[in-house]
Length: 304
Image: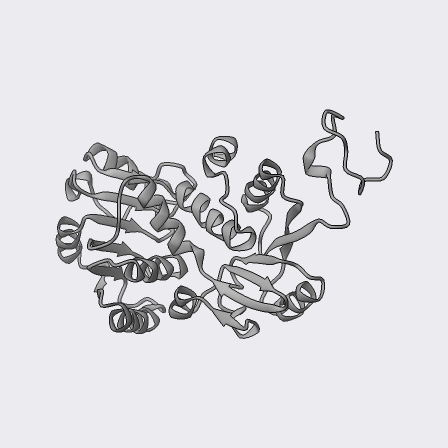
């Protein structure tokens, strides 16, 4: 066995590929707080291994106060890219040089690419959900869409769907939500820039919500309602609200099948679980960093 860990180990030596870290190994990482629960290290490190990419992905617990120093340090160390999760998705924007259209419109970044010291921010949450829908045979182009929620994921999904040619998007949130004014500005900007008609609606108006779902071809649940441990919670009262021509997506991945998705299956809908969005938003980031396609189906089988 080689004594120095930076010397490539011959094939068949028995040493796990994940420990082949050398002087040329690239670093990618996740910044946020907390980050211990993240599946991203397993997803990206396994992808690096499968594709033979000399890189490693780690998690660093970094809050908003520590973020400027952390980003400066990463750039100085030549880190190729990094992800951000709460509470850093908005706070990172003043530290970046450029923004993608989706990141600019939503005011949130979850992926950064370092190109020779120039930092470009992207938001892959929306692209991940749109790709997950496409994998299930559903395109958002020309479709009427209902989105439940107004947080970061909902905003990213609305922006990407509008950019990808959705005909209309109805966003349901509580009128008392602290995100209402921000979502109103986003809807106005998206309508103006994309030609997609976006409108805001009160989540507590059940008649309006039922009519919107009935007229939509895609329903996207982008709140935390239904997440473990409160798995019986659901913003849609029953399967009778759903119809067979509807595709229902849920951003929650714990549990793997929410009550909403169970009702959607009962109603004959096409369903898109949260793990699909998690996988493909990671895949989008992977491609931005490496220029290669993540072996998504292998990762799905291994991790999910």
